[in-house]
Length: 105
Image (tube, rainbow, N blue to C red):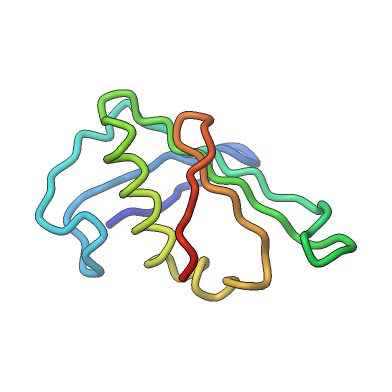
């Protein structure tokens, strides 16, 4: 299962294994030296005014950027928190500090 486990106020570690929701599918990935950093706060939103904003970054040195981007996109789609807040919170996904361009649904 892929999940974030809190360490401090805004840094999370990524744990991975076989998942019931198919995020990893049949792939086995070495994420032992990987780190997810989450920053959540109040900031400007595209519709105007202010609202909650979140930025999630996956730094996974053993993986290629394509694998990291695919993993982040699939995890973001399957995550219960992402599903519950989709459309209500501006979320930026990055891989190693570089923004991941997401396709419109």
